[in-house]
Amino acid sequence: MNDDIHLPGGTERLPLAAAAALQDDLMTVCNDLERLLSLLEHASDALLVSFHAADHEATALDASPLRDRLRTHLGRAVTALQFQDMASQLVAHSQHRLRHCADRLARDAMGDDDDGEALVTHAPQRPNPVTQDEMDAGSVELF
Image: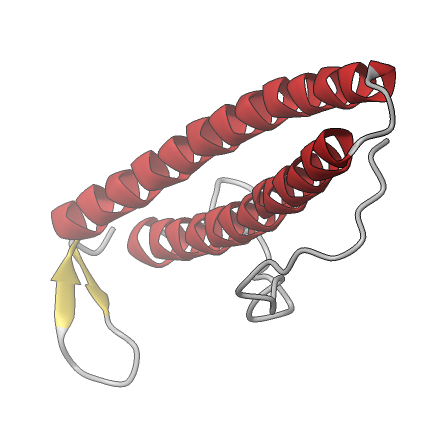
């Protein structure tokens, strides 16, 4: 086994130990992103339950400007909650790309598996799954 790997497009070599450390770092970031996705999902679920309960309580209020304002605020909050979906898509996409890089690095540094072919996760097809960069309040149907 070669102790160095060639870097793309040049004659420089990356020591095997450095490649292994880099792969470990990439996998640590992937694991951190997985925890972030879990936290975002938990917070989103809790907020959704609270918004649903608040909307239910608003229904019990007599028709008034207060109820209308409350529903407007809840609608804006639900729109902002859609951030969780976009953030989760971006995190998952980044995680997938990092895993692809870690797999390629491992294959290039350590060679193929015993069966002759190292498993490398395919790179995401699209460069970015979310093109929207802001949330505008519009008409939001609560549940």
